[in-house]
Amino acid sequence: MVDFEEDIKNCVQVLLAGGTILYPTDTVWGIGCDALNDDAVAKVFALKQRPAEKSMIILLADARDILQYVAAPPPDIIALVENFERPTTVIYDNALELADNVVNADGSVAIRVTTDPFCKALIKRLRRPLVATSANISGAPTPTVYSSISKGIVTGADYVVRHRQDDEVVSQPSMLVRITDDGEMLVLRG
Image (cartoon, rainbow, N blue to C red):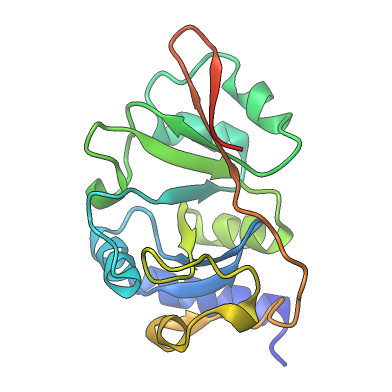
């Protein structure tokens, strides 16, 4: 069995080469790639058979990293994000520095700061944000555990993380919110 550290090393190698990974996130299993690499993002869209107009979630390791990828976020965003009680993805306007095809047509981007130890370690080692989209063909049900991921997704990823493959604890997708210009939080998915 490959240990946590071995998985991190293998993921970083694949991600830096522009590849895709299948990995456990703080919510469900995800397909990931370097969120700064347009070609890698295109591979994720192809693997999911997802229309390019649909955006994907970006994972960051630390709340302060939001400031690097979002122009003019709300002034209290770091404190707000650090106090979420469950995995929460925030839609921000005015994305910066990310691959063009990971940013929505209106310039917005969905970002979640992960608390998962594996994801946090991977993002810190990669030193780049990570795409995190559910490990399913677009329109198919979201697999809640590794064993329910379709064979096409598993064989289509350039690297499949072994960490937590036996975990049968069912997790839910993240809460999805948008913060308005006046600071109000709108819940789009609870």
